[in-house]
Amino acid sequence: MTNILLQLNSIYLSYGSHTVIEDIDLTLQEGEIGCLLGSSGCGKTTLLRSIAGFEKPDQGQIRIRNKIVNDNATNKPPEQRNIGMVFQDFALFPHLSVKKNIAFGLTKLNKTAAAQRVQELLDMIGLADIGEKYPHQLSGGQQQRIALARALAPKPDLLLLDEPFSSLDVELREQLATEVRKIIKHEGITAILVTHDQHEAFAMSDKVGLLHQGKMLQWDTPYNLYHQPTSQYAANFIGQGVMIPGTVLNSQTIKTDLGDIHGKVPDGCRENCPVDVLIRPDDIIHDDKSEHQLEIIDKVFRGAEFLYTLKLNDTSSVLCITPSHHNHPVNSQLGITLDMSHVVVFKRNLTK
Image 1 (cartoon, rainbow, N blue to C red):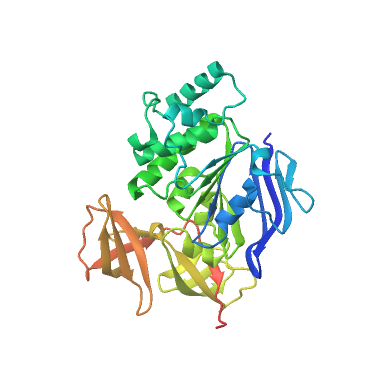
Image 2: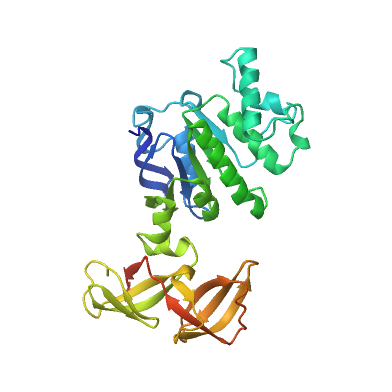
């Protein structure tokens, strides 16, 4: 049976007349890794700082291990919340060796136990032989692992990571996110990551909260956030996809320029109701034998694959990913079939 490690209820926070966080709820089970995902200015870092104790919400309640750390009457400081933090800039002490950086928070252990814990963490992060080096002698990826080890050393109840990979190159980010996930899971620590990068979010997290203008639009698994978005903003923000217009024929069928699509229509939509259908690249399957041909208007080579942009009509296009040995020129025709395993449909908003 799982236990709730972190619980937020109706969190609000404003700066003057500007509302930054509005009515946010979330629950994180012990051992889970959560993520606050969203574009710049959506409120994700402010929410993380509220959990840490660096910001005081105007109203709402925050519990860690079922103990209230913030409500109208309580606001425990960060040092009383048993949390670990990993920052964007790593915040390593330049005058301390790697071992001393990791040992910095181990004040409750004797010297022998602290040294053992430090070496255990160095072994776990794959940097067992660099304990005597200093931060300036390490690569960015190595510094990030040391910052993580330092935060994990005291075995906090909750680990908070604020854009921890933003200073690293793109290729390293997703790889390191996967490695960091394994380390956190090995330690059995509950964690929350803040990022604007959905690839990092998906590589690392068990639950993802999509924030927009201070509101939590969806708190769900990465799989559900991608395949079952509950709002058009989420559908547009997550993954690559386009909305194409459709018309409801019956409770299970929508007419589109790609043909009839079968799936549940939105509640309240009856025959002839205008809708928008989400089409992702993995919904469009390349098939040279198909009678359904679309014109290639653009393509991007990605090494193992091509991303084709296909003309649907004068105003709409769709995307298709194929293995890169299927090399078709722009302006030629590409045969396609549909594999709409997850039909995502929204009632069209006709108001301007």
